[in-house]
Image 1 (cartoon, rainbow, N blue to C red):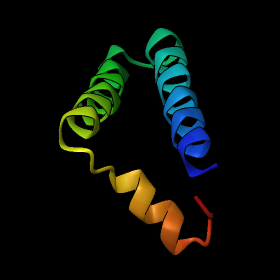
Image 2: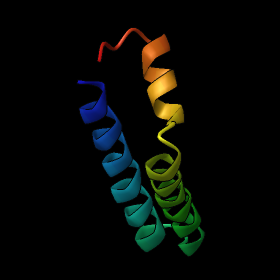
Image 3: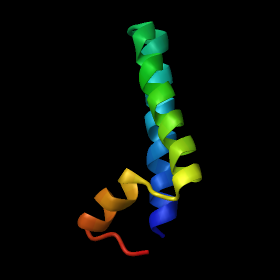
Length: 61
């Protein structure tokens, strides 16, 4: 369950930052890169900050 939330939140962040880059300022692409880097980091280390945040918010595994 929590894994679906992490993927959904990452997808929302990426799509939102792409829209902001198109319509507001291209510097929003740095946020897209940040989210991508965090996804890559979590795949290598098996640790995800968003997992910890969701756990504290009460989302079950």
